[in-house]
Structure formats: structure tokens, C-alpha cells
Amino acid sequence: MADMVVRNEEFEEVVRASFGRQGLMAHLGAELASVAPGEVRIEVPFRPQLTQQHGMFHGGVTTSIADSACGYSALTLMPAGSEVVSVEFKINLLAPARGERLVARGRVVRAGRTITVCHGDVYAAGPGSEVHCATMVATMMRVEAA
Image (cartoon, rainbow, N blue to C red; front, side):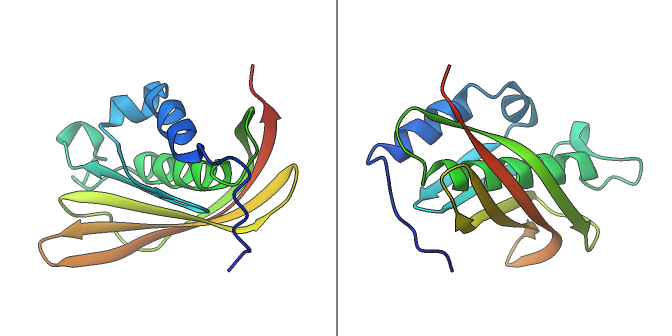
């Protein structure tokens, strides 16, 4: 696990404010469930509007929340005045995303001054169970806040 050096004591407020400005996350009904140094959890409750033709969560939903969980995990370790953008990611869809909700857990693997590498896992959750349905490796870049 990466050395989690917090460079902004207000990281949680920064992450929550940024998440609140994301139109896509609002559209998906995503919730920022937890924020900690180098780690973020995002959850999306099931809705028929988020499915593909077989009634499972669409891979685009899975990918979007994994990307955001990775990006926000990176932002938790950046200095004040930072924003983050994705510059690359690879996702493997491992199993059908069937459940009451999707849970994405992003964590920092290595944080640099400009580039941060993260890992994200997505689980389809139901009563008493979680199925690991996707895994992502992502590269995030720090940019100055506008």
C-alpha cells in the first residue's frame, strides 16, 4: 500500500464538493459513501435506467464509478488548490453486475506530485453478498484548480 501523505487537511471537504459538482454522478444516483486518505467508496443503487439489454448494470455505469472512485482517492492526497483528471485507465469486467447496488472502492497505489496510480474494484452487492464484477488500474493527473 502507498504511503498516504495528506497534503491538505481539508481533503474530505474538497472531495465531497467536487463530487457534488459532477453531473454524471448525480444522473446515476451515485453516493459518495466514504472518504479517507488514499481511499474512496462510491455506491449506486439499482434502477432499470442503468441497465443494459439483459437487465444488469451497464458496463458504462461500472466504469464510470470505478473511474471516479480512483480519481477521488487520488485527490485525497493532493495539495490544496488541486483538481484531478483521468489520463488513462484499464478496466476488466469480471462478472455480471447483478445486484441491488454497485459499490466502487478506489485506492491509491502510488501518489506522485503530478501523476498518481490508483486501483479500483467494483462489486455488485445484494443481501449479504458482494460479487467482484470489475477491476481497474487508473492513472490520474494533478491539475491546478480553475
